[in-house]
Every structure is written in structure tokens, then in C-alpha cells.
Length: 114
Image: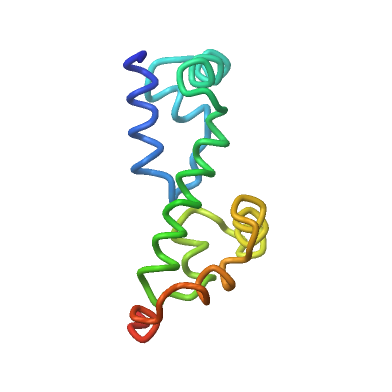
């Protein structure tokens, strides 16, 4: 795999909770934005925005299952500035709302609200 894509993936995995932009990631790995997007899709098999969304929603699933944090706080922690957008994205990806997902989980962590 192209080392610039590997570096970009690492940036995305560590900075997913921030307002990550393709141009900024591209600049950090020494590519133009258009070249970065083309190379990323070629190497990873999906767009950088789809990959970033997948990282964010995967982390959200972990937090929903392992923490007592509110859904609103989880949305912010994984990079969504609007909890409604987070809920829409989560439901589109997993077929249920974050609340429904959490309610189906074991109750052991629900009592440890932070």
C-alpha cells in the first residue's frame, strides 16, 4: 500500500473526532487534494469520507456499548457537531437508532454514567 495512504489512514484514525478535511490530510501527506482522494479510493476501495464515517460510527458503537455517556456527548466525541446528523448516519449504517442499539446491549455499563 502507498505509504502516503497508510499515513493518511493513521491521521484519520487519530483525528477522527475533529473536523477532518481532505485538503488538510492531503497536505499532511504531501499530496494535492484531488490526487489524495483518487489514490485513497484506489488503495482502500472506498472514499475517504466513507472511511472516516465508518471510523466514527465504529467508535460510537463502542462508546454506546461500553460507556454511560449520553448519545449527544458520544456524537460530539466521534466528530459530529449535530446529534441529529449523528443519529441519521448511525441509523443509515446500522438500521437502528443509537438509542435502540444501546437498549439492546447488556445493562452492565448503563449504571456507570460519566
